[in-house]
Image 1: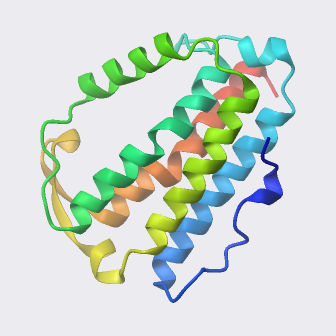
Image 2 (image 1 turned 90 degrees about the vertical axis):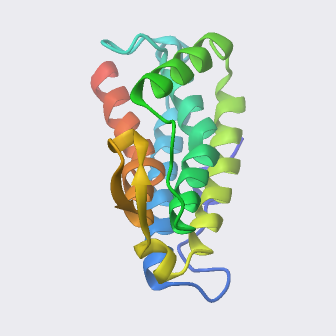
Length: 175
């Protein structure tokens, strides 16, 4: 099982945009925080349902890990100046429901391994972006075709995701 020290230290692996590296560092920090919290959970807490969401804590941790590749793909689409089309909130809700149904018995070890692997890959993909790509805007259907920058898409999805769900899990468990 990965540990919180397994993630990058924030130093870029190669020449990279300062802005891209800062985004990658924030993603890694969020993944580390979620990992550290998840490691501390009892089996009962791992199986606890999150109010107003319905998914278990374990499923939500696995969900964060499993969507990093999709979130990065959407940001890369925008970075290439292409619109993101056909993605609606209903699609996101359906994807999340299907994920929960398929992964209800996910183990802590499996979820944390996926979280480590996908967060590491997501951070590397972010570090590969140039300042120009981060500043590129394109229409994003999830936001009513508003022209959004790649950086915004990253911040509102891949970078924010672990922080957002960690806060919800903490509230649900009152920790």
